[in-house]
Length: 537
Image 1 (cartoon, rainbow, N blue to C red):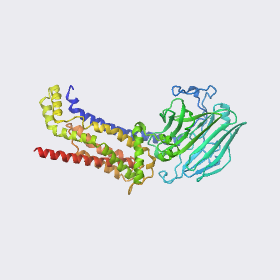
Image 2 (image 1 turned 90 degrees about the vertical axis):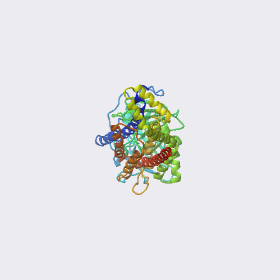
Image 3 (image 1 turned 90 degrees about the horizontal axis):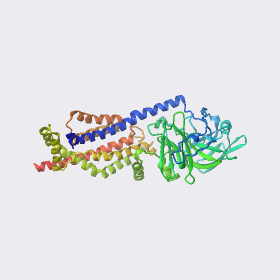
Image 4 (image 1 turned 120 degrees about the vertical axis):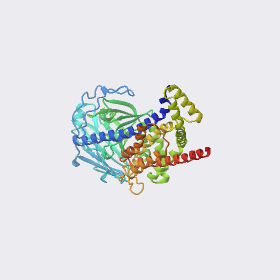
């Protein structure tokens, strides 16, 4: 080291960097992303989402991804025709399962899906509907032949059943469309759990595409990632977020394609035969997924909550539909463990408390080392100041004597920071688990907390979190000499409390519990050092 800042100042810089990461992460999520997403939602209500009626022009696809297909017979232009709102007279089949109600319109598409389970309610306590009126609808078919495609949007389907009751048993029905002699049929098998099998075929071997539709758009759940998720045969996952697709991308060897928002998804999957999928941008560069077919295709589909157990029951690989961001490799096993604890506890709030305690115990060796290092640096503070004063004009000697002091007393200027830095991935993983787990939606904890997925209505938990953070700060040794830095750190409990006012109660509960146990650990270590100091005297 060549100067004092690389020794004594290193700890300060690392601590500040860590806290800046936390503050930036939280601020970006709730002051930038959330307002942008809410603004887009309001704009969508005013302007209405427009979807194009043309098939994907895969002649201009991104061929860098898994040997993307090309076909010169496909449409070379994109129609500007837009979808229209679906009225009750347009519905030709109403499907009711044990978990949802699915409306099929006159063009053979899913016009709406309403969730029937009591735990899925919007902010007004009404049943949740997954789709906006004017968005690209699931199971819409588009033909590569432009003439056939244009006629297809003018010809109504017929159905073998106007009402399908699949609440207790598997039901089948067929939709048929006759396009000047070209007959397209959709053979449905609907299951009580809400998923379906579908076989689509044409009387002549025409190339067509079928979509799983634009993602669900539940406005109450707008602060999370949205877009398309695909799983490839080699197990790799690729995410394309909303407003990020500037050209068509195509894939071969796909197991499933999922359009999703925070809690809900519309998925097409086939784990026996690979799917070929193209993503086509809409007018706002949002990804629209189309599955390729030549004459016929069969697959399964699911439209509904991204509930881990429900997806696992359909196929364990479908649990990959749940996206946890950068720290999925930590978050997914963490959620599995959370589920395991919940099977014994039965209450998601207490499950979070127990998970927090277990994590604190696992990370205790790291936390202990950091706390001990901070105590040692606090005890060395007078000697450090003497060295700084004595060698204020000779930075090289100052650094040398500082290093000798650290070595003599077994102190590490980085000791208080590294444990904290190593815990950041764990925090972010827990953040994504608690933010994206629909299992917390409608889950009560105690007293006034009736939904761990929503903010605390009375702000009790955020305030308790802020108070606990203040207490933790007071009992934690502080070796900072700079008054400005001290003031910044003193403001952090207020800043964090402000952000946590709008956090889901489940996440705030985790942070509050974490603070309580950190206070207990710090208090114990402080007492140990006090006894050691008393013994020396």
